[in-house]
Length: 131
Image (cartoon, rainbow, N blue to C red; front, side, top):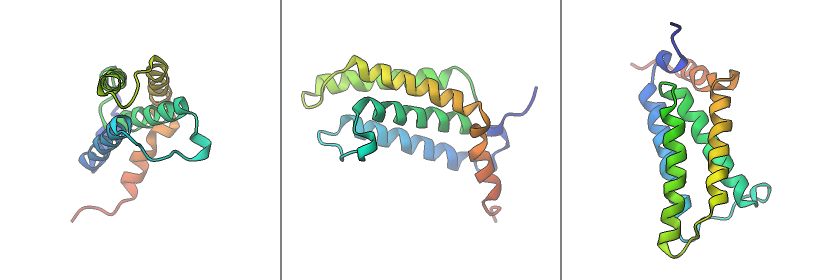
């Protein structure tokens, strides 16, 4: 069996910590009462959701062992956050946001197994060796 890129990372914990930081940012953005304004090219809410979850899935697919569990986790996270938005009273529940999140996960997962899915390994090899 071939060794996957994540197993070759010299600093897997760095990249994994950055993955969890991204999850924290997405959670905060989805639950904060007044998130910062998006750039004009991302003014459409569904594009924001899709891009955020594509980025998460792409990153997770590079720095964690590949499998169905990470995409499933990210889709579940998107669904759970939508329910929390609905229950919070400030933001609104939107099934279309869930679909945009799931589409983003599918796109990011596909990118993670494409040549773009080797970017973190490429960056990792270019960082100076630990002392």
